[in-house]
Image (tube, rainbow, N blue to C red; front, side, top):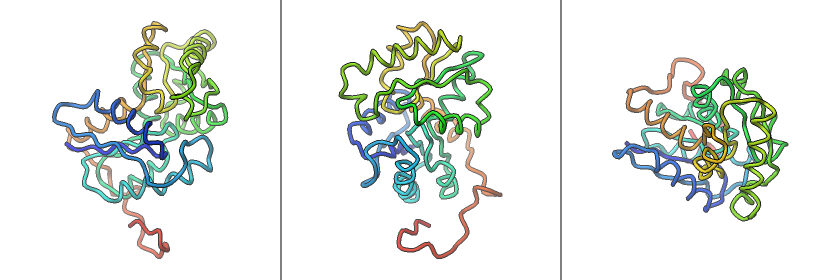
Length: 236
């Protein structure tokens, strides 16, 4: 089985981290390839960033050649459009993480990077039917690219997770950024509750769907997009 894990931003060090998180949970017969677009934003922290990132995601998915795809950004950018381009399963890390958390407790809290992204994270939760399980969303106010460089980042994420558990009285923490994927085990020990990171959750969701022989339905909404003139950036 070959899975493509797409980091929608162009930060290569984050792509390597994401690939490691996916590879750590994948089955022994699963080959993980982690990639990022050649151009686009170095991080995704706004609707504008997401809009710039989506064409790169779609270009990578449109190339085909894989049994399934993971979109490794917590806003799940381009996931629905990618499902139109391939019959192989396509899963975003936000929905996968929140759905996994809903199996583990009555409620979960999300700890993410910047507060400006929280509204969109709520949109993803509502679209997936998961908002009723979410007790709250909290931002540590550490920019994505500084997760790797700011020596205070771990402490700030831990403090925000502790605040979320105390404020929301939730049972599970969901990490709201792919760049936090390497913190889940440590945080779970520190907090004493399950901590879900989306890269691993999405990787195993895609692997499960492939093993079950299930593919994206092409009967309605996720049928290939209608043929039409789309200009020089045409993907299909």
